[in-house]
Length: 119
Image (cartoon, rainbow, N blue to C red; front, side):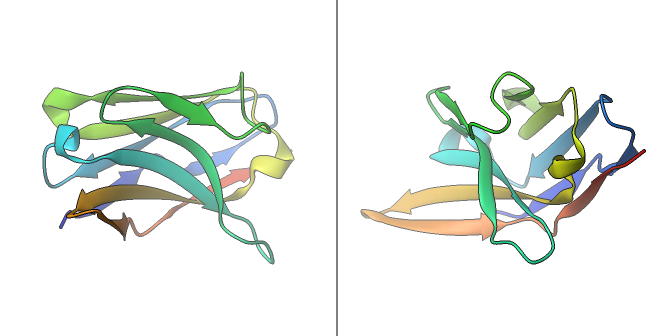
C-alpha cells in the first residue's frame, strides 16, 4: 500500500505555470508507475502524464510539450510542472500509484488538487 498527498494546485491566468507535487509514503522506486490524472466537471478522468520506476515517461497529446513529469527519489515525490496553461487544463488533478503484486496491478489515489486556469 501507499498513501499519496498532493499539493501545489491553485488559480492561474492562461499562459501561466504551476507545479504539482505528490508525496508518497514509501519509496517511489518500488512503485511500478506513478502518474497524474485529471478530471474536469462532467468529464471522465484522463491520464495526463506517467513515469515508470525505470524513468520512462509518457504524456497525453493535449499536454505534450507543455507539461513535464519528474521525480525526486530521495524525497519520494513526483512532480508535474505545467507551463503555458490553458483554460482547458482546468480540472482536479489526482496523483496515482500503480503497484504490481504477483502479476496483479493495484491503483492508489491521492485526494486531488484543484487547478483553475482563468483570466
